[in-house]
Image 1 (cartoon, one colour):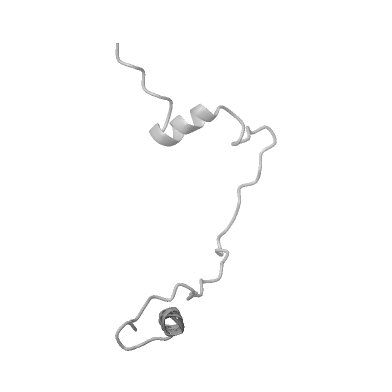
Image 2 (cartoon, helix red, strand yellow; image 1 turned 180 degrees about the horizontal axis):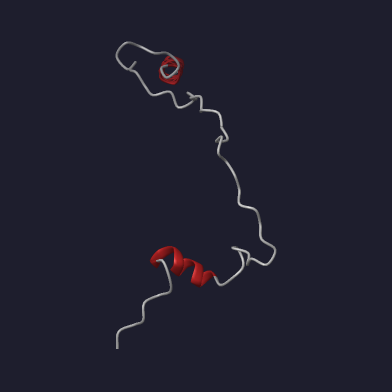
Length: 83
């Protein structure tokens, strides 16, 4: 009985520890998920100018959302439905 217990423990230990080492059979090149690449620094263009605000101009964020969507999708208001 004691021999079975020792043998079972040895098999369990070898199986558990087999994942800790690397052998030539299962060792392969894997992508490094923690590799970080350098990004280019943010640069402000030399000709970066903003238009001056006008006092009575409507604000772009104000207005109807549906009209803004239609302007973005179709370049204007929606076409009239066919009869």
